[in-house]
Figure 1 (cartoon, one colour):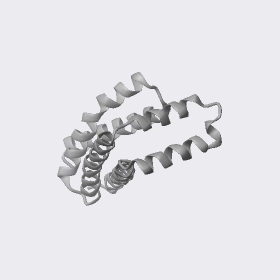
Figure 2: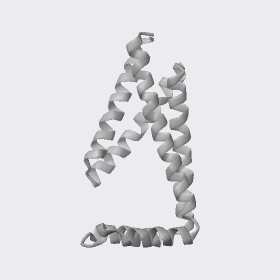
Figure 3: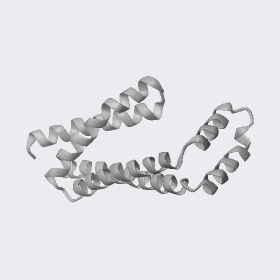
Length: 150
């Protein structure tokens, strides 16, 4: 494998591992919010921030958060762990140069692109555009690498 390809695969692996870590943190937070005292404390803290004054969106978000049931937080935590596991597997496999990881990453990343596009269509955001662009680049690059047969 060319050193350029190895460096690119390592960069993608770091990106995937960072996403896995982020999802583990989301899961920890979601499972921690299942117990309402934590949720109440979070809500009080968010509403005490000076940003709250004049920002109705923050108030609405906190009110929606308080309306969620413990089952919803458990679902969020479970999904975050599941996706985090996939990202960790992709990252480890790419870091160690496993061919199956390239296929897995192409499939898993490409399968989420329609959902990312739908989300951008309904709630536009520049960070979402950047994430979609990065994921598209990863899919195209890895697909070419897989097709080339290294």
